[in-house]
Image 1: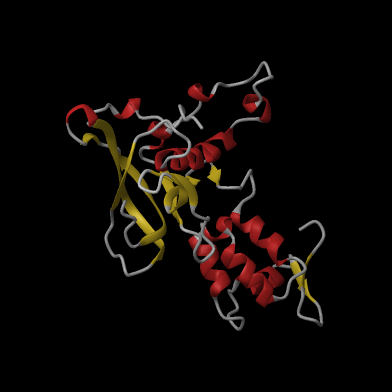
Image 2 (image 1 turned 135 degrees about the vertical axis):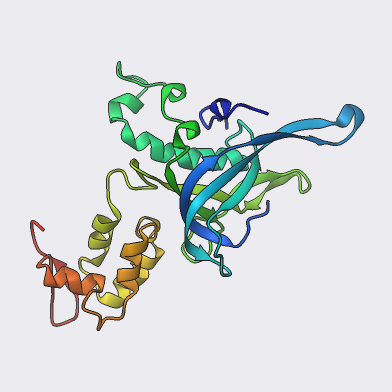
Length: 247
């Protein structure tokens, strides 16, 4: 068995999905096991890593899922164009948000090598957000990965990370889900805003915020109504919302 501390998403070069499509949960463990494919001289060995997630909160699923845990597995690979590579790059993009531009710039004296930055092993015990990249219902698009049977790149459904507790969210770069929702509401009617917000990956990652946006327009605690009540937005005669300067 490979030691969990040896598992890394930092050495990248150029399944079955289950019913969940977007959820958050605490990364509990990453056990591995060897897998052998083929026989004799053609036999190939790979390492399969299983991600065990506990205390999950389901955000999107294609069928009811009432269990507190979820598990999915991938073959370890250092290739970017692999399921593990795509998963790893999505995680690394979020982990790297905690570093300054100088620490990311290889020409800077403050540069921190990728191998010295946080890795998936430091995420054990943290709550992460996971999403299936299938291109459906506003989720990330499928990824072009090599298919050995087809002998060409084909659109492939993969798992990605969209948030890391205490660090950030995909595409966030310091922007919170609430701030993104306010940006989307500014200059929009409610119907246009709702469509944009429900398709936005950053907003969809915040369950409480998403629920407030999904409330009926008559609900006083809906997102748009609370923004107006708080004096952060106004609504004109054409039902268009405008953010109050300085708010």
